[in-house]
Each structure stands twice: as structure tokens, then as C-alpha cells.
Amino acid sequence: MFKMATRIIRVAATLQKFSNKTSLVKPRWQSTAAAAAYKETLINMPPTRLTTLDHGMKVASEDSGAPTATVGLWIDAGSRYENENNNGVAHFLEHMAFKGTSKRSQTDLELEVENMGAHLNAYTSREQTVFYAKCLAGDVGKALEILADIVQNSKLGASEIERERGVILREMQEVETNLQEVVFDHLHATAYQGTPLGRTILGPTKNIKSITRDDLLEYIKSHYKPPRIVLAGAGGVKHDELVKHAEKLFSGLSIAYEGEIPLLTPCRFTGSEIRVRDDSMPLAHIAVAVEGCGWADADNVPLMVANAVLGAWDRSQGGGTGHGDASSHSHASRLASFAAQDQLAHSFQSFNTCYKDTGLWGIYFVCDPMKCEDMMYNIQNEWMRLCTNVTEFEVERAKNLLKTNLLLQLDGTTPICEDIGRQMLCYGRRIPLHEMEHRIDSVTAQNVRDVATKYIYDRCPAVAAVGPVENLPDYNRIRSSMYWLRL
Image (cartoon, rainbow, N blue to C red; front, side, top):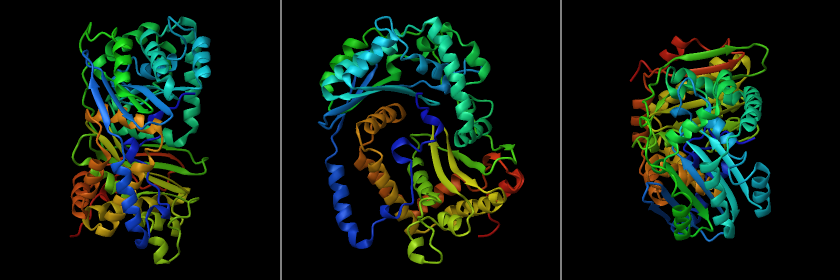
């Protein structure tokens, strides 16, 4: 019902989806015009304005003068802040958000939003909970008042809680059929075993059946504090008006903690594996990752470039399917060329998932039952090449892809609003696009080799595999291919 953002793993939201569509790499004769257009786009980006209210809540917005706007609350609280007993409570709360407040019944809420022609949505990730509304620029004040009401005055009625239990349990069954989500949950479970990042966002069935109103209230009291909330706005939003609304609507939020102040516990990475072998399934779904870095780490941008060198590929794309034709190969990553030529996989995507202090850097792929070993061999071969002899040409291509995707991802008020909210929580500021472009441009092939050596070479990976995975090499063999016995 409400999208679960984190399970489709996103690589730094705006910087994450890489495709190998050939149109993204411009022929040389187009490059000057394209570069000029790109620079012009960067120059014309409106600035992000930031105000911190007296009680610590941040208001950040970008006014593009658009006829529509997106406003939302980004809260520094997700499943990582739960324990074994209340795992699932953050997501449960997100479900309860639109079920009525002390001022509005669920029907009133739905009618009010519908009459405005607005869209309300919410999602939970491992580190964040988000509530946002997309509306006409003239309705920003009304939309904000509804969001403030939802976050501060949700009724959390007994009958609604019971009804949502059933909804969440059904959602869990749906998630079981989405194999990519299943594999990524397993990957987190093995990579971060024994820590909060190893748990799922939805929580175990027993918790969903036993979560009470008190658990929900306790979580709000512990985590929905002004210094941990960012009000983000994008599109037709006037920053000063947004600040005035925020001062009025959120003045009742308490900054004081009744009990202990919840602290972020470090989550250690463990090289290990989970295999769920099921030979009745047609395809094997496999993810392999090493420990990456946190959002604010200086290595993050070179790791993103390394990630873009490998890229993503799908049989239906056609990119990189040339058979011996060098021109068709020049547009796709080497891994895409191998996967296409030898039919090693149906699809693969590299990912760089960041958290505050750690991350997962790796590849997810789908292949035929007897192709697991060959695909894994090619992936690890490419990983070793990243560490030893990745070329300047590949790195330049990856940087262009990354910069193009940076802009493509920010198309519309909602992605921009999401970018503002997420960056405010992750970095404490919004990194201007021209700064991000400069950071990407400054990455060299040597930087990529250095960062790959640091994070990949001779490291223990985490592996999650579901389906007919008999052909996947055992863990010790995968581990022994994480280095080359040659210079």
C-alpha cells in the first residue's frame, strides 16, 4: 500500500540507478553542446535555503517557482533504532499515519486530501521515516498542516491497529514473492548479523502480532524529536512562508527526553553467507557485497564511480549485446558485454547502499541455474580489475554516466524534495550539484584503484543466494577469488 523504499536498494537516492543505455554516452561530436547544456543546467539550479528553528528542527527548501510543490518530513528514525522486541514498530507507525487524528477521522483526512487534488505518501527505511505530500503550490500551507497533524496527533485507535496488523502481514506475504527484496533482506541479515541493520524493516511476524499502542507511542516519544526532523520543500515553495508555518505547526514538539537518550549503536559487518536452495525455482537470485562506507565518508564518491564502471544490465535493454563489434561494446561495461555474449545472466545491477557509518557495495544478479559459477567468476574478475588496472577511459565513461544520472534523478519536485530531506539527515546540509559534479570530476582511475583495493581486495564478502544455487561456488572458493596471486 505504501511504498517500502529501502528494500529496492537505492544507491544514494539521486546517485544510484545506473543503466547502460547507449544514449547516455554521447558521441564525441555531440559532447561540446551536451557539456554546455549540462553546465547551464547546473548554473540555473535554484539554491537550497536552510533555517534551523529554536527547538532544533531544520527547514530546507528549493524554490523553482513550479506550479506544484512537494513538502515532507524526513525523520532520523527507522528500523535501525529498534530492538529485537519492537522490530517493525517504525513501519507499523507509518501504516497508522493516515488512519485518523484527534482532529480528523480517516474519512475526513482522505476527503480533504482528495479535494485538494494532493497525494499523501509515506515510507520507512532502515535509518529514516518519511511523510510527504505533493500538491499545488497554493496548497502548501494546507498540506503542511495535515502532515503536522498526522505526525503529532495520530489517534492510534485500537480497531485501526488491529486492522493494520492484517494489512502488514499481507504485505509481508507479498514481499516474499519479490525475490530481489528477499535477497537484499537476507544480505543484510548475514552481513550485519546480531546488529539492528541485520533485521528487516517489516519485523518478524510475532512482533507484528504483538505490537501495542504503547509500543507505538514509546517509539514516537523516543525518536520524533525536533533536532531529528527535517521539513523539506521543493517546487513552488516560498522558504520564509515555510518557516512561518513550521514555527506555528511544530511548536508543540518537545525536545526533552523522558528516559535515556537513544544512541546509534555501531553495526559491525561480518563476511558470511545465506543460501536458500530451491531447485523448483526457474532462476537463481544472488547478491554479493563487501562492506562499503558511510554517507559522509570521503571514499563515497570514488566508490560510486567504481560502482558505475560495473553498471547495470538487463537482457531486454539490448545495450552491450554486440557480438564482437567493438563499437557496440564501447557503450556498455565489460561485465555487461560478458553477460550478454555468453548469456551468463538475465540481469545484474551494481549497488552502493550507504548508512551513517557503514554500507554495502556489491552486485545483485539473476541467472540460469547452471550459470551461477561463470557469472560469479566474471564479477570477481571485474572486481580484481577495478583494484589493479581499470582504465581512464572506463572511469571517464562511468563519471559521465554518474553525472547524467545525477540530473535525471532530480526530475520533478518529489525527487528534489527527497534529495533535500535525505541529504540534510545524512550530511547536515544539501550538497550543491556543482560541488557534487566537481567531486565526481576529480576522481581519477588511480583513485578508483585505491578505493577498490581498500574495500574489495582480500576482503570477506557477504553472499545471499535464493533459488537453484547448487552451481554457486562454496563460500571459501568465493573468498579465495577476492585476491589475485600476481602483480
